[in-house]
Length: 136
Length: 384
Ligand SMILES: [Zn+2]
Image (cartoon, rainbow over the protein chains, first blue to last red):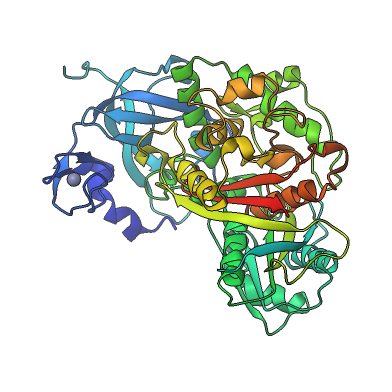
């Protein structure tokens, strides 16, 4: 399931956090979904999100699914992006005890999966504590 | 539309059945339900199952189970809606009988989860979530619920220990259920000290990985009366959906699909939450029990835990839940769970729930949830 084309199709989201703005109602959408969840039109324009946001919730994983054993324990968070949407991603560059709801984080590109013997190494977004505080 | 009755129920003990295959688990439940109904044939067989392809390398369960259950030739297929597969299959059986397309339908939910190693089972269960945007980031199904639970605690000011009553109640009720996986009590103290899975969710917040099968026989109400037992009719069968991903919900702390599903069921049955005598809810995790109570209208938002803390969820309480142990202690063989819930409501409405009998139970509700809230199937059953 961890195929090259499957990961390649998501490159704009994984590396640049490309989502959408609905030109009909103005809502910001991530992940992109073509049909607006607010107004059901298809008037979307692609836009790269800033990658800044804050922790909405988090959990440290002690029993990882197959493919993620090497990272355990690791912390998964729901991050509220400054544009509005929530995104599910791992936190990185910090100890799990340091995580707090509301802390400012920013997107970085990191290894998400090693792919084992034959699979692709997968890169994508994770979030680390913000070095610059989120723009006001 | 015709009215539909549940004329037979059957179940296997939930547990780790290393000596029994998926098809034989299904057979045992089907035969028990057919014997209970006193029927030897059927027009159709619907199989609720989530993970047979991923964990057993076996799809195409409809024809397989029909053949091995002695029903070769009948209409048969598998129905999948993640952890809601069982009730989804019951829903399809209801549709067939209510619509006049079949007079006798057998529905079996079956799951075999103990043949694989933990990380593989964990990865398979995560298929209920968004593969590209949740599972790909290492979020297990437990983790997604943990994210909701931590935010709920933060927003409403609860501690982890406040969730204990759901686990304590489920284990207490499982003690007298011979089909339950965990027939031992759990104390509040034991709950506090349990091993962490994905914080704040620990082992005793979570339902177990296990094997099991349960079955019901459906027929038009009135045409087929059980010889010796109270007749149980399906007063409502309703489905609501929501986003697959937790991050896409309007509010992660609200099960909007469960609100829709519950409301549709209440409207169809012409009842209100106050009319429900017992509620078999989907306590895959303690947080889901709290959110289900809120979505179904038994508690205001953020108040599901208060209901449990006040002792209102016990057998003698205002709204008894998980009366035979629930997902937590009876066990959660995912695609079978929704059918177990219906079987247990029927036991209660027939007055055959033994030590766990809810006094004067006349109207019971079962709610089965696929994923972290994306498919929600509600059935309201009534003693006629
Ligand atoms: Zn729009």
